[in-house]
Image (cartoon, rainbow, N blue to C red):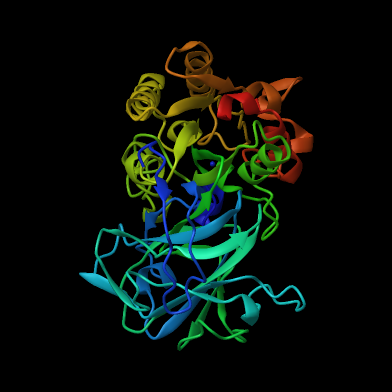
Length: 428
């Protein structure tokens, strides 16, 4: 719900854990030894993928002889990790990753893009430091034996020696990525780098854990994506939820949290479909029904999906309650088919002074969808964000203390309150 100008007002694996008794071979410095315990791959971080913006910019132009440095904030830690790259929406026949590294940030400098050179690990693909990725595919790196803790900031640097063409990316990430000329994968700093609030090609990070608790995928829109939260502060409600799960483990098991929120995303409409009679935006992603397979069913260890969607279908598309409910039903049955538990979230109020955005008729749609969410057997649990976030004196509006100012997105305190309202037992 929040994108270049116009959009700024506009935007609101199967659940089979891979159990491995593996020995991780050292290769090109990417691993330092073997692991012989029974462990499971679990997603610790992820971002929903969308096509590049047709309006131009870095997501459409892509990268040529450039490095891309991206900072991610994980949920759970582990004894090894791997990254997942996605070219799901690429237009070139392939892209080439010439070199890739992962490292810790250098906390002794004021620049968040600086890395600690003593922590740099080479990322390889079938033992090779360079790889060609075919259009439309995902790519897993070789495992890196490296113990990282919970909620660890990691810096992934990718070098693209030849033109990538239009990218697969995640816009308005609430984190800054850095674009620099040449191969900077082993450079401590990237002075003068171009800064963008997007992730590019990087779709997920998995960790290898004992007593893995699986992962929880948040299938959402800009509210899950943390629009208007503190930039770089990891103040999105899924971040706060991860903190609560880590502080309250059960039987030593803590699930990872994967934030698959995409700003402006709708349940039944693709990004380029009309918005209130005007044009759409590719970067708000294909419909959640389309995204379900790639963003929820594919990542490692997903055992629960939290569905925080529907408000954009109302105010951007004037969709009917029946159409929204049919879409939510499909998300539920397709997830349950993979033995994934489904948690629904009621739609928060959004009344504003703009009649084209909020009308009594659209409010009636929101109320009807919320009634379905509260009473339908399609869900294994419900988080009543509507009840939590509405103004008791004006239930069509957000509580003032939780309103970021645009009357649809919470502020940091509101996002924290949302995380605090989740019954953790539903996610375990």
